[in-house]
Image (cartoon, rainbow, N blue to C red; front, top):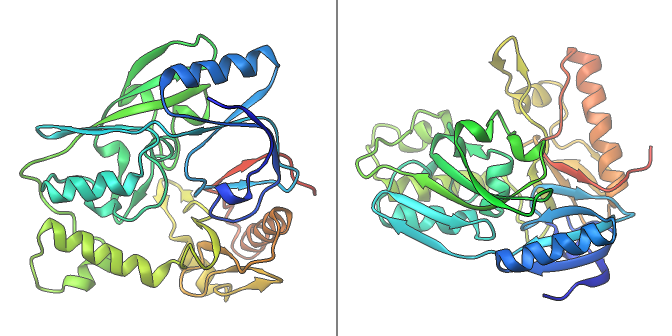
Length: 311
Protein backbone atom coordinates (compact mmCIF):
# COMPACT_ATOMS: atom_id res chain seq x y z
CA UNK A 1 0.00 0.00 0.00
CA UNK A 2 1.28 3.43 -0.97
CA UNK A 3 0.24 6.59 0.90
CA UNK A 4 0.55 9.63 -1.35
CA UNK A 5 0.47 13.33 -0.49
CA UNK A 6 -1.44 16.25 -2.04
CA UNK A 7 -3.56 14.21 -4.46
CA UNK A 8 -6.32 15.91 -6.46
CA UNK A 9 -9.71 14.41 -5.65
CA UNK A 10 -11.40 15.93 -8.69
CA UNK A 11 -10.76 12.89 -10.88
CA UNK A 12 -12.20 10.56 -8.23
CA UNK A 13 -15.69 12.11 -8.17
CA UNK A 14 -18.55 12.16 -10.66
CA UNK A 15 -19.19 15.86 -9.94
CA UNK A 16 -15.69 16.44 -11.37
CA UNK A 17 -14.78 18.95 -8.66
CA UNK A 18 -12.69 18.92 -5.48
CA UNK A 19 -9.37 20.04 -4.09
CA UNK A 20 -6.40 18.11 -2.75
CA UNK A 21 -6.31 15.42 -0.11
CA UNK A 22 -3.39 15.88 2.28
CA UNK A 23 -2.92 12.10 2.17
CA UNK A 24 -4.45 9.49 -0.13
CA UNK A 25 -4.24 5.72 -0.51
CA UNK A 26 -6.02 2.79 -2.11
CA UNK A 27 -6.69 -0.37 -0.11
CA UNK A 28 -7.50 -3.78 -1.57
CA UNK A 29 -7.65 -5.91 1.60
CA UNK A 30 -8.29 -5.62 5.33
CA UNK A 31 -4.57 -5.63 6.24
CA UNK A 32 -4.00 -2.57 4.04
CA UNK A 33 -7.09 -0.91 5.50
CA UNK A 34 -5.80 -1.50 9.02
CA UNK A 35 -2.37 -0.16 8.04
CA UNK A 36 -3.95 3.00 6.60
CA UNK A 37 -6.09 3.60 9.69
CA UNK A 38 -3.08 3.10 11.98
CA UNK A 39 -1.20 5.69 9.87
CA UNK A 40 -4.08 8.13 10.39
CA UNK A 41 -4.04 7.56 14.15
CA UNK A 42 -0.27 7.96 14.42
CA UNK A 43 -0.49 11.28 12.53
CA UNK A 44 -3.72 12.48 14.14
CA UNK A 45 -5.53 12.60 10.77
CA UNK A 46 -9.22 12.56 9.99
CA UNK A 47 -10.27 9.71 7.69
CA UNK A 48 -12.69 9.75 4.78
CA UNK A 49 -13.66 6.56 2.93
CA UNK A 50 -14.16 7.04 -0.80
CA UNK A 51 -15.81 4.60 -3.20
CA UNK A 52 -16.58 5.67 -6.76
CA UNK A 53 -17.23 9.25 -5.64
CA UNK A 54 -20.74 9.28 -7.10
CA UNK A 55 -22.55 10.65 -4.05
CA UNK A 56 -20.14 13.25 -2.68
CA UNK A 57 -19.30 16.93 -3.10
CA UNK A 58 -15.68 17.54 -2.14
CA UNK A 59 -14.78 21.14 -1.31
CA UNK A 60 -12.39 23.20 -3.38
CA UNK A 61 -10.09 23.28 -0.35
CA UNK A 62 -9.91 19.48 -0.41
CA UNK A 63 -9.66 17.26 2.65
CA UNK A 64 -7.34 17.88 5.59
CA UNK A 65 -6.65 14.26 6.43
CA UNK A 66 -6.37 10.81 4.85
CA UNK A 67 -8.71 9.72 2.05
CA UNK A 68 -8.88 5.93 1.80
CA UNK A 69 -10.23 4.71 -1.52
CA UNK A 70 -11.71 1.29 -0.97
CA UNK A 71 -10.94 -1.27 -3.66
CA UNK A 72 -11.97 -4.38 -1.74
CA UNK A 73 -13.14 -6.71 -4.51
CA UNK A 74 -15.01 -9.99 -4.72
CA UNK A 75 -18.53 -11.26 -5.44
CA UNK A 76 -19.71 -14.74 -4.46
CA UNK A 77 -23.08 -16.45 -4.74
CA UNK A 78 -24.28 -19.13 -2.32
CA UNK A 79 -27.70 -20.40 -3.40
CA UNK A 80 -29.98 -17.38 -2.94
CA UNK A 81 -27.38 -15.23 -1.19
CA UNK A 82 -24.75 -12.90 -2.61
CA UNK A 83 -21.68 -11.84 -0.66
CA UNK A 84 -20.09 -8.73 -2.13
CA UNK A 85 -17.07 -6.74 -0.98
CA UNK A 86 -17.44 -3.00 -0.40
CA UNK A 87 -15.28 -1.87 -3.34
CA UNK A 88 -17.29 -3.74 -5.96
CA UNK A 89 -19.49 -1.83 -8.38
CA UNK A 90 -23.07 -2.03 -7.12
CA UNK A 91 -24.43 -2.46 -10.62
CA UNK A 92 -22.08 -5.38 -11.30
CA UNK A 93 -23.74 -7.16 -8.37
CA UNK A 94 -27.21 -6.38 -9.73
CA UNK A 95 -26.25 -7.51 -13.22
CA UNK A 96 -24.98 -10.88 -11.96
CA UNK A 97 -28.02 -11.40 -9.72
CA UNK A 98 -30.39 -10.72 -12.63
CA UNK A 99 -28.40 -13.11 -14.83
CA UNK A 100 -28.86 -15.80 -12.17
CA UNK A 101 -32.57 -14.87 -11.91
CA UNK A 102 -32.27 -13.94 -8.24
CA UNK A 103 -34.92 -11.38 -7.31
CA UNK A 104 -34.84 -8.40 -4.96
CA UNK A 105 -32.39 -5.82 -6.34
CA UNK A 106 -33.32 -5.54 -10.02
CA UNK A 107 -35.17 -2.24 -9.45
CA UNK A 108 -31.87 -0.76 -8.25
CA UNK A 109 -30.18 -1.45 -11.59
CA UNK A 110 -27.73 1.11 -12.96
CA UNK A 111 -27.28 3.06 -9.73
CA UNK A 112 -23.64 4.24 -9.88
CA UNK A 113 -21.28 3.69 -6.98
CA UNK A 114 -19.85 0.93 -4.85
CA UNK A 115 -21.51 -1.71 -2.68
CA UNK A 116 -20.10 -0.07 0.45
CA UNK A 117 -21.51 3.36 -0.41
CA UNK A 118 -24.84 1.72 -1.21
CA UNK A 119 -25.02 0.34 2.32
CA UNK A 120 -23.95 3.62 3.94
CA UNK A 121 -26.64 5.60 2.11
CA UNK A 122 -29.29 2.85 2.03
CA UNK A 123 -29.68 3.35 -1.70
CA UNK A 124 -33.03 2.84 -3.32
CA UNK A 125 -34.93 3.29 -6.55
CA UNK A 126 -38.32 2.52 -8.08
CA UNK A 127 -39.88 1.22 -4.88
CA UNK A 128 -36.90 -0.82 -3.58
CA UNK A 129 -34.20 -0.13 -0.98
CA UNK A 130 -31.03 -2.06 -0.20
CA UNK A 131 -32.17 -2.57 3.41
CA UNK A 132 -34.94 -4.83 2.07
CA UNK A 133 -32.38 -7.52 1.23
CA UNK A 134 -29.44 -7.00 3.64
CA UNK A 135 -28.87 -9.99 5.89
CA UNK A 136 -25.67 -8.75 7.54
CA UNK A 137 -22.76 -6.38 7.01
CA UNK A 138 -19.12 -7.00 7.95
CA UNK A 139 -17.57 -3.82 9.28
CA UNK A 140 -14.19 -2.50 10.42
CA UNK A 141 -14.19 -0.32 13.53
CA UNK A 142 -11.77 2.60 13.18
CA UNK A 143 -11.55 2.98 16.96
CA UNK A 144 -10.73 -0.63 17.88
CA UNK A 145 -9.21 -1.82 14.56
CA UNK A 146 -11.46 -4.90 14.78
CA UNK A 147 -13.95 -6.42 12.33
CA UNK A 148 -17.37 -7.78 13.22
CA UNK A 149 -20.82 -8.36 11.72
CA UNK A 150 -23.92 -6.22 12.10
CA UNK A 151 -27.40 -7.61 11.50
CA UNK A 152 -29.92 -5.74 9.37
CA UNK A 153 -31.54 -4.24 12.49
CA UNK A 154 -28.16 -3.21 13.91
CA UNK A 155 -27.42 -1.23 10.72
CA UNK A 156 -30.24 1.17 11.74
CA UNK A 157 -31.35 1.71 8.17
CA UNK A 158 -33.59 4.69 7.47
CA UNK A 159 -34.48 6.57 4.31
CA UNK A 160 -31.04 7.28 2.74
CA UNK A 161 -29.40 6.79 6.11
CA UNK A 162 -27.76 4.16 8.32
CA UNK A 163 -25.54 3.70 11.37
CA UNK A 164 -22.52 4.14 9.07
CA UNK A 165 -23.21 7.87 8.78
CA UNK A 166 -23.10 8.17 12.57
CA UNK A 167 -20.28 5.86 13.72
CA UNK A 168 -16.69 5.23 12.67
CA UNK A 169 -17.48 1.91 10.99
CA UNK A 170 -16.13 1.05 7.55
CA UNK A 171 -18.14 -1.38 5.42
CA UNK A 172 -16.03 -4.40 4.41
CA UNK A 173 -18.59 -6.69 2.79
CA UNK A 174 -22.30 -7.35 2.72
CA UNK A 175 -24.45 -10.47 2.55
CA UNK A 176 -27.70 -9.97 0.63
CA UNK A 177 -30.59 -12.43 0.90
CA UNK A 178 -32.26 -12.59 -2.50
CA UNK A 179 -35.16 -14.72 -3.76
CA UNK A 180 -35.18 -17.56 -6.29
CA UNK A 181 -38.92 -17.39 -6.87
CA UNK A 182 -39.44 -13.72 -6.21
CA UNK A 183 -42.22 -11.45 -7.32
CA UNK A 184 -41.29 -8.49 -9.50
CA UNK A 185 -42.10 -5.05 -8.13
CA UNK A 186 -43.46 -3.19 -11.16
CA UNK A 187 -45.99 -1.03 -9.32
CA UNK A 188 -43.85 2.12 -9.52
CA UNK A 189 -45.45 4.57 -11.95
CA UNK A 190 -42.61 4.76 -14.49
CA UNK A 191 -42.22 0.96 -14.69
CA UNK A 192 -45.97 0.42 -14.85
CA UNK A 193 -46.27 2.84 -17.76
CA UNK A 194 -43.31 1.25 -19.54
CA UNK A 195 -44.83 -2.25 -19.60
CA UNK A 196 -48.53 -1.40 -19.80
CA UNK A 197 -50.43 -4.71 -19.87
CA UNK A 198 -47.33 -6.85 -20.51
CA UNK A 199 -45.95 -9.21 -17.86
CA UNK A 200 -42.14 -8.83 -17.90
CA UNK A 201 -39.41 -11.14 -16.64
CA UNK A 202 -36.56 -9.98 -14.40
CA UNK A 203 -34.20 -9.27 -17.32
CA UNK A 204 -36.83 -7.12 -19.03
CA UNK A 205 -37.26 -5.11 -15.82
CA UNK A 206 -33.52 -4.39 -15.69
CA UNK A 207 -33.57 -3.31 -19.35
CA UNK A 208 -36.59 -1.09 -18.72
CA UNK A 209 -34.97 0.63 -15.75
CA UNK A 210 -31.87 1.30 -17.82
CA UNK A 211 -34.00 3.01 -20.46
CA UNK A 212 -36.07 4.94 -17.90
CA UNK A 213 -32.95 6.16 -16.07
CA UNK A 214 -31.23 7.22 -19.30
CA UNK A 215 -34.11 9.61 -19.98
CA UNK A 216 -33.92 11.15 -16.51
CA UNK A 217 -30.21 11.31 -15.74
CA UNK A 218 -27.39 13.09 -17.59
CA UNK A 219 -24.48 11.26 -19.16
CA UNK A 220 -21.80 10.90 -16.45
CA UNK A 221 -19.04 10.98 -19.05
CA UNK A 222 -20.25 14.29 -20.44
CA UNK A 223 -21.39 16.19 -17.34
CA UNK A 224 -20.53 16.36 -13.67
CA UNK A 225 -23.30 15.15 -11.38
CA UNK A 226 -23.92 13.11 -8.25
CA UNK A 227 -27.39 12.02 -9.32
CA UNK A 228 -30.27 12.98 -7.03
CA UNK A 229 -28.89 15.79 -4.87
CA UNK A 230 -31.79 16.15 -2.43
CA UNK A 231 -33.82 13.68 -0.40
CA UNK A 232 -37.56 13.56 -0.83
CA UNK A 233 -38.82 15.24 2.36
CA UNK A 234 -40.92 13.25 4.82
CA UNK A 235 -43.82 15.31 6.20
CA UNK A 236 -46.10 13.79 8.85
CA UNK A 237 -44.97 10.32 7.83
CA UNK A 238 -45.58 10.86 4.10
CA UNK A 239 -42.91 11.15 1.43
CA UNK A 240 -43.23 14.30 -0.67
CA UNK A 241 -42.06 13.93 -4.28
CA UNK A 242 -39.64 16.84 -4.42
CA UNK A 243 -39.19 16.65 -8.21
CA UNK A 244 -42.88 17.46 -8.60
CA UNK A 245 -42.59 20.40 -6.16
CA UNK A 246 -39.58 21.82 -8.00
CA UNK A 247 -41.42 21.43 -11.30
CA UNK A 248 -44.51 23.19 -9.92
CA UNK A 249 -42.31 26.06 -8.74
CA UNK A 250 -40.89 26.43 -12.24
CA UNK A 251 -37.41 25.41 -11.10
CA UNK A 252 -36.80 22.53 -13.50
CA UNK A 253 -33.78 23.56 -15.60
CA UNK A 254 -32.95 26.46 -13.24
CA UNK A 255 -29.36 27.50 -13.98
CA UNK A 256 -26.77 29.82 -12.50
CA UNK A 257 -23.47 29.91 -14.32
CA UNK A 258 -22.43 26.31 -14.93
CA UNK A 259 -24.67 24.76 -12.26
CA UNK A 260 -28.28 23.76 -12.89
CA UNK A 261 -31.20 21.57 -11.91
CA UNK A 262 -31.37 19.05 -14.75
CA UNK A 263 -34.12 19.88 -17.23
CA UNK A 264 -35.35 16.26 -17.34
CA UNK A 265 -35.18 15.58 -13.58
CA UNK A 266 -34.89 18.56 -11.20
CA UNK A 267 -33.69 16.43 -8.27
CA UNK A 268 -30.45 16.07 -10.21
CA UNK A 269 -27.87 18.87 -9.97
CA UNK A 270 -25.59 19.13 -12.97
CA UNK A 271 -22.16 20.68 -13.46
CA UNK A 272 -21.86 21.77 -17.08
CA UNK A 273 -18.09 21.83 -16.79
CA UNK A 274 -16.60 24.87 -15.13
CA UNK A 275 -18.47 25.14 -11.82
CA UNK A 276 -16.45 24.63 -8.65
CA UNK A 277 -17.63 22.94 -5.48
CA UNK A 278 -18.40 26.19 -3.70
CA UNK A 279 -20.61 27.35 -6.56
CA UNK A 280 -22.49 24.04 -6.50
CA UNK A 281 -23.00 24.33 -2.73
CA UNK A 282 -24.14 27.94 -3.00
CA UNK A 283 -26.59 27.08 -5.80
CA UNK A 284 -28.12 24.12 -3.95
CA UNK A 285 -28.42 26.14 -0.72
CA UNK A 286 -30.30 28.74 -2.75
CA UNK A 287 -32.64 26.08 -4.18
CA UNK A 288 -33.40 24.81 -0.67
CA UNK A 289 -34.05 28.35 0.53
CA UNK A 290 -36.46 29.06 -2.35
CA UNK A 291 -38.43 25.86 -1.68
CA UNK A 292 -38.72 26.77 1.99
CA UNK A 293 -39.81 30.34 1.23
CA UNK A 294 -42.45 29.29 -1.29
CA UNK A 295 -43.74 26.01 0.18
CA UNK A 296 -42.45 25.99 3.77
CA UNK A 297 -40.85 22.62 3.04
CA UNK A 298 -37.37 22.02 4.43
CA UNK A 299 -35.26 19.94 2.05
CA UNK A 300 -31.95 18.30 2.86
CA UNK A 301 -29.13 16.95 0.67
CA UNK A 302 -28.80 13.26 -0.04
CA UNK A 303 -25.14 13.60 -0.95
CA UNK A 304 -22.22 13.81 1.48
CA UNK A 305 -20.22 17.04 1.80
CA UNK A 306 -16.49 16.55 2.29
CA UNK A 307 -14.21 19.30 3.60
CA UNK A 308 -15.10 22.91 4.42
CA UNK A 309 -17.17 25.24 2.26
CA UNK A 310 -17.14 29.04 2.15
CA UNK A 311 -20.35 30.85 3.08
